[in-house]
Image 1 (cartoon, helix red, strand yellow):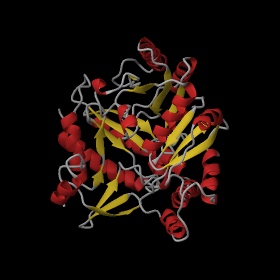
Image 2 (cartoon, one colour; image 1 turned 135 degrees about the horizontal axis):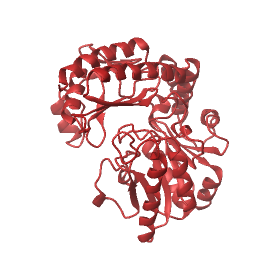
Image 3 (cartoon, one colour; image 1 turned 90 degrees about the vertical axis):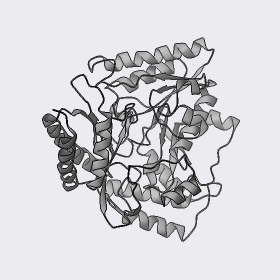
Length: 421
């Protein structure tokens, strides 16, 4: 299979793990390989309510046997889901536009922001990920170098309170000040700002999580300069962080645009760009919007079923409670092994940062070995962050305390194996 993959798909694709897995089946929190060995999925947030959740499977099966077409015809599925999604938003965010991927959702957000503000400049955090089209890859700063970006893209430091520039006490205000510096850079280039975009849990920088007040202050600064605030909720949204349904709700403010993607349909392609109405009205005066597969009846049926499961099974509460249990368990292991320098995050979006010493030097090699060893023990996770020394945990929302205990038992064994004295 590796040889066929190389021959048919080419060299640009990447695989997880030294010994890649041939996954053939999923069920809840588990993935199964071709030898029927099961793996606890701690990483893949696409299957938001669990792999092959029967309610979602049935919704897709039923609708695909009736009709699948596009939004140039009337269909109740897209309207019913749009209404339900907007019910989860503040009143100001009252229009939703559908696409297939988070990349497309963010691309549309940039188009609307640029049309509304008549600016082109984009401010984004360092080591960010927002998608893979040409325009969005350019602001996915974890995957490119400054010299490869257009002059209209300016970065600001991710507000990391563990190893970053500032402590918790004044982090929000001081990190927000960097947005003023970014605005000044754009001004020096004779570029008007269009938007500041941020993944509201700041995942790719290491799930650093914005300090209280940062998102609100950032919005105030960029709006004062004539730009918009775009909250990328593709990863933290739909109750994953437990405390709130959306990541931006950690602060008391309303974004101008909110984007979301892969977890919406539990893996069935659907994404959304939710906008304040005045923005899209100006956009519509200049152009229309159409996406052949965005908001199709089958995808909307899948998304509606995901929302059903979140509410029927009280999964946001589950993320809050079991996530807290999991986090405390990891912290207990960290007390025994200084290899774990920090444990952070909320709900079912956690990070374990591995360090070599008290100076917080990143333990990149140890983190890599831990990921490989956990896989051999039936647990799937992976590393993130600028130094790839941070384990990112995003289990499905149906993850239980029993699953957490299995993970904690194995994690302790593996961390002990690769710890320093």
